[in-house]
Length: 457
View 1 (cartoon, rainbow, N blue to C red):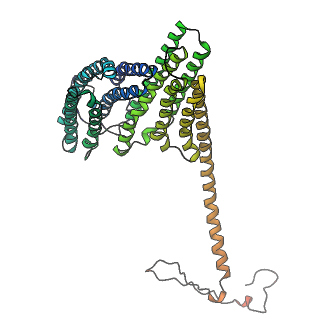
View 2 (view 1 turned 90 degrees about the vertical axis):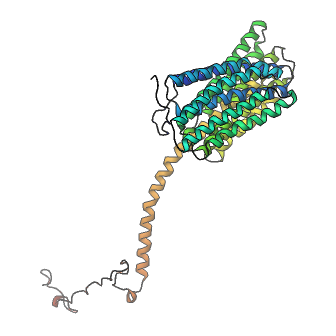
View 3 (view 1 turned 30 degrees about the horizontal axis):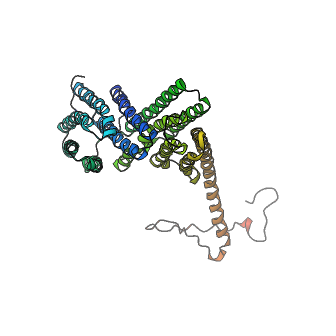
């Protein structure tokens, strides 16, 4: 369609799925995620975990926030006409420019190229919100205008960050992060944009697959390059196998519950959407940690065994805990089910001190976690129908027992106090007194019996 008015889509739309343009948009973020992971590997392998984690968080926030802004807007206002497609492609250009500036932002705290990429993305997205406001009225129009104004104000803050002293940039960055996170909260006050719960959950699931896929790709490249130069198969194969088991378990656990049933309003959706920053960042960092473990195994990383293990265990444990906190705990019943993922996160973290085979042990922990979770879920599923049948069986028995109790109470009532009047009549209606029994017939008088040939006349 060349052009169509941009109006809100229905929250109840059936069969709402991701479009090819959305999938293409997600694919372009792989470059930025790979750049952030590569810089994290370099910092951890050189023994600078503090600098590496802080720089990784700042860079990954920019990646995640750009993706999130587009995703929630598209869920509410995707009209898939030519102007919409062009604006989305312009945002993709901004993503690629941002990815080109990741190395300078990470290593030298120079955000010039990254901010230019954000300007490109924000111009296109602001135009989209203004177009949505033109097609709306009332509270919906006000909400769209708030989004557009918030984007412009925050982007002005990012431009001003370029001229701030280097020592103050990190603190000012945190201020701008808080301002960015407040834009949806303020814009949605008074009117909730019509995002689609099933569509949003699917989009987040697809991005989770992207970060886990990047983990597999990064670890595969690391193992291959190590094998080309070394023959330490006894150390590399356990790392490769354990890394795959960790990623497989992470995928299984994330998609184990129907999360769209929980997202009914912004009260649940905003904390859930924001919390995914840690899920996405930790999922991508698992791959970086595996690369660090490989470099340590072949003698390239200048860190201890515990530090190399922690590069994998910390993000893996964070992923498990955050998936439980945002996803699983809303669907688990009983203490046993609720404790599976938190305990698995603690055990995974404890694998940091298990030596050269820590990654393999963590992978086995993931396998056990999935197995235990499936067993508990299966038991509860089988127990549910049994309890329902038993409950249905008890209900009629209770009614029979009640009738028996009423009968026993009636039998214990003295005959002289029994009243023939119907005391159960509704108020306002006179009680009906039954007619007295008929008088004895001559054949039934006391002392006389009926003839033996038949009934009494």
